[in-house]
Image 1 (cartoon, rainbow, N blue to C red):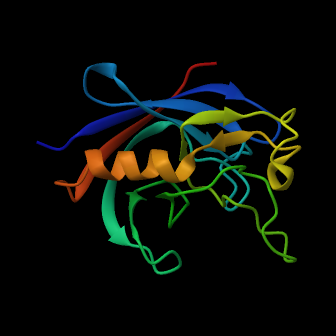
Image 2 (image 1 turned 90 degrees about the horizontal axis):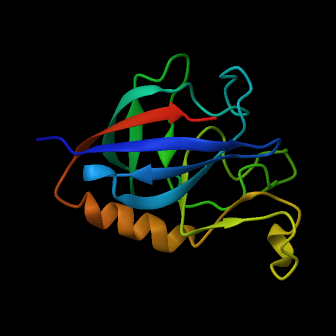
Image 3 (image 1 turned 45 degrees about the vertical axis):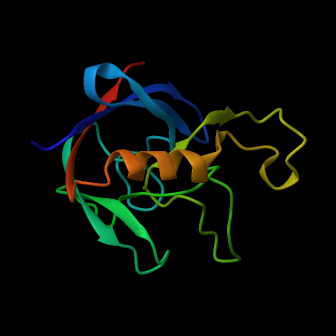
Length: 153
């Protein structure tokens, strides 16, 4: 049986779409951060709500296993991977931490947190590596999962 997960998007912010990922029996798995909704435009928008299959792949850019969504309308290479602030720039080309992917987290990062200099001024999640490791451990025996994305706002 293919495990199913839900992402319930609960906070559409100007610089992030925040949510909660749940698994079997609606037990919370982690928090999530995505880019804000911008009409499904590649690289600057989160994906449309819907039901997606995700397959475990070796990420060429990250060198680790991740889950990559299949069948996202007009999009490709949408993964669940480690990241904190969806719109934080990561290079001089203007690329951001997320280009449409989904970041798991352990707590929400708020713009008002000043203690973390590199993330100050951005919304997103903290503890992404820990949450990602937990998620991948939950899915360790599965090469395919189902992910339902629901807008709850």
